[in-house]
Image 1 (cartoon, rainbow, N blue to C red):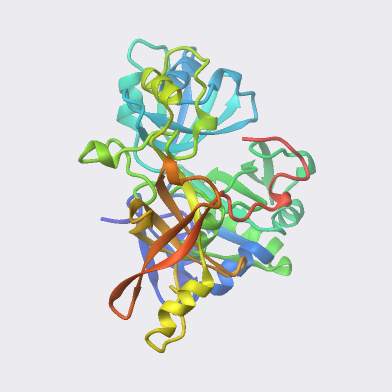
Image 2 (cartoon, rainbow, N blue to C red):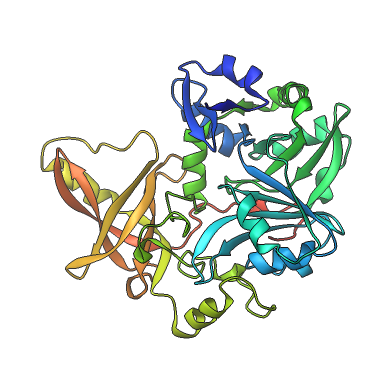
Amino acid sequence: MLKVTPFHPRTAPLAQGQAWRRWAGYVVASSYELLHDREYHAIRGAAALFDVSPLYKYVIGGRDAVRLLDRVVTRNVAKCRVGQVLYTPWCDADGKQIDDGTISRLTEGTFRMTAADPNLRWLHRNAAGLDVTIEDVSERTAALSLQGPNARTILQVAADFDLTGLKYFHLTSARIRSIPVTISRTGYTGDLGYEIWVDAAQAVPLWDALIAAGTPYGLTPAGMLALDVARIEAGLLLIEVDYISSHRAFIEAQKSSPFELGLGWTVALDKEQFNGKGALLGEQRRGAAWQFMGIEVDWDSLERLYAEVRLPPRLPTVAWRASVPIYADGGQVGYATSGGWSPLLKQYIALAHLESAFARPGTPVRMEITVEHRRKQAAARVAKTPFFNPERKRGGGGGGA
């Protein structure tokens, strides 16, 4: 039976079309309004509030907490300071990516790990012989994501803490209308944003406090459809869409390494042994066979394909999640995994896996487009991601992931 999040008493009445989707055993809103357009524009023009409670959340502590985390993830957790958040993938023994998420150092000996998929059993298996505790706090901890250019202003009104010094990918304890919370400067939109972590019992009062503080600044509850457009603009991966967990893949060709997913910067090959290190060292030496890149579709080419059948161009009304072939030099050289029209950039964009020989930014390629039930190819070019990377995301506090 599907569960509801601790914020459901507030989110359910807002869902005009009752458009819900599944996420980690929960139901969350696809959009609250009948169309997601206003929710998307709130992300980029004011502020949007997302319920991200379905994330899996684990608290890891004990004398060997750092040893466990450094054993399982690719980042160097020993270098993580109290109050810092690390984005990181984790891999199997062959260096293929299992999942990705964040590790927050809450105290000297306590960490919170977030994940898209359940990883509790896997963590326990890797903890054999270590003095460590692993606690699943997923249902006890609720979370909201406050994203957009007005996010800091809204939180500054609501919280009892001066947020101007909170660095990108750092966190702090605070109170919002007397409710104890943890605020991290993180998010999944590629914009200025924060995530607020709270005891599930305080979820509804927290929602009310943020809505009261944010309404004068355009704060808008937003669902997954708007988030999908924003995260594609930001070039951010989605598990089981842009890559398949190696734990779920049926064949080797479905698996990807961090180097193939554009996450080589997260792989600390200078630290001691960790899952997949040997395979990743080998891949670094020979070079990755694939690269994860952006695709920008040429508008004039798209327009001509539709003009041939006497139709105006038809753009997807929501971001799509599908395998779409990419061609160059007379053959297929990769495949897009998600994409759509960017209202902000006024551009048709996609995220794609490309053979490394065709992954240089600016390389001309063609993306398959279906026009009136017939498969066509629109001219496109390879692009770096993120497509959208505003200075405000990192500014006003500095720091990095």
